[in-house]
Every structure is written in structure tokens, then in C-alpha cells.
Length: 102
Image (cartoon, rainbow, N blue to C red; front, top):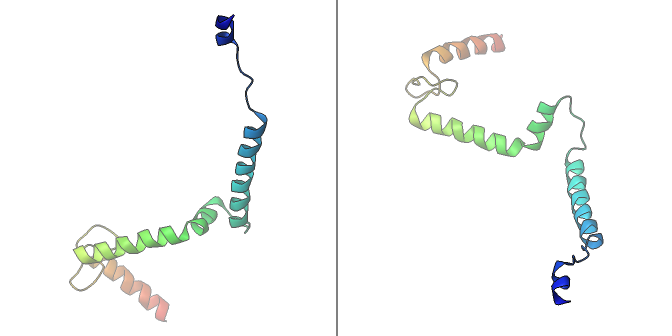
């Protein structure tokens, strides 16, 4: 008789565990719904607005690093002395400023 007990399967505890897991998932969904309640035109805008702080930190750190090393901020060429742009992007920026200031 004791050998038969080894092969018997115990009834799984499903009811309580499943309910707890479902509530956790719904809580997580509710949190994301609250964050994304704004309507965005496309998925790229949605991604940007949800990750804005992280993206801005990355962008600013890259700008500071390039400025320290002396590399152009817009490309990988050497920057002009005391500026953040290379000669090409400095000319482009000057053209942009002329159009903007008219």
C-alpha cells in the first residue's frame, strides 16, 4: 500500500494562485493605462513621451562628452577650437541663423 501512495498525484492548488496572479497583471495594466491615457498621433510620439527623461539624459550626456573630447556634436569630425561644431556644421549653423534672424 505505501508504494501506491507515492504514485498518487496531489491535487494542484490552482484557485488561489491563479487569482493572485491575475490581480497582479491587472494592476500592472492599470498603471500603464494611466501613463498612456494621452492620445498620441503615432507610436514614436508615445515612446518619446513615456521615455522623455531617460532620452534627454542620454542626449545631454553625449553632448557633454563630445564637447569635452573636442568632437563635433552632429558628426564625428574634429570640432573647431572653442566650438561644438566642425567647420561644415558651423557653416550650416550660420546659414540657419541668417534665415532665422531675417
